[in-house]
Length: 78
Image (cartoon, helix red, strand yellow):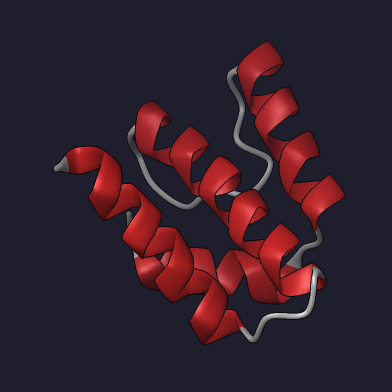
């Protein structure tokens, strides 16, 4: 998870756009907005940003939404 990339995506795009990027990338193999060279990392960036953006749209500030998401990820990895 690259926080810098996630911050950039959530600052520029809404949840619907991020989900469309993921759908398009999955169906065509072409990244609408390139963030990384690795396809897995690219898809993860779109999906993670969509999750964070949804929390932001519910009223949380970006840093709180990112922190909450990172804690969820760390919890899964333990």
